[in-house]
Length: 349
Image 1 (cartoon, rainbow, N blue to C red):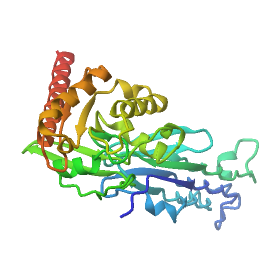
Image 2: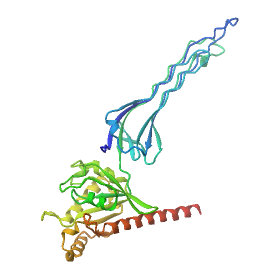
Image 3: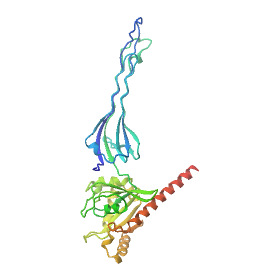
């Protein structure tokens, strides 16, 4: 199924039913008095996260969603039936944004999470509510209020533990194929990957993490160049970034160091916090360099970059060094969980 990560929809909550003007009419009771009931509440619109969905493609065709209107009040003080709510199912990882204000209404990050996006209208009051000692036959009732109408933008961000950074053709798709069961398309031209792919890397029985192969990045991406923001927003939820670099570009004018710095500039322009996130350097395509020169070349690049975080030298296509990277990643997440558990125990104490 095609991956669709953004859609705009319109939601209409139901209006409240109108109150009723009615008088009691029974034999032998000539002055029965008012008995008009209240109108029913209008239905509201809710958005719920469903782990069974993985795309927003349905919203490209079905864009308008309406909750049911409340029924009008009736005689004998019978209130109108409340309108049914409208529930919209979206994939886990969807952000709901108000188009008019650009405000994020909610971020659906786990299965079953629900947010209300449009409030139904209140039911109107029937004339039974307006009787008094001085007005025993009120002919007044109020209409129901209108339900909210909103223009919403749905944005689906890939939920992954690890995000792969890198220029087009850095070997990201090949890397994810090497460490997981994911099978993204691989070819020898830029922008082979046009949509994110998720792969589960299983280290042990209870040890696994999710890695995302995301479309390649170019200079100007933060301003919309190439796949632009469609790429950058997907790395915002990952806890660890793997920065893949072609250690032996075919073009002699291409400098791996400059490529790393170019992507760092785009990350900073989009969200400076991303530069503070753990980011490991992975020099790929080591098989294209003579074996006795590989380490020397990689260390020279690390020195020029003044790199302080972990770095690795791999050949994704030959699957050399890729499993070692996966083990290090699992160790990293195991430490995070252990630290979180220790912190929780300290707070409880």
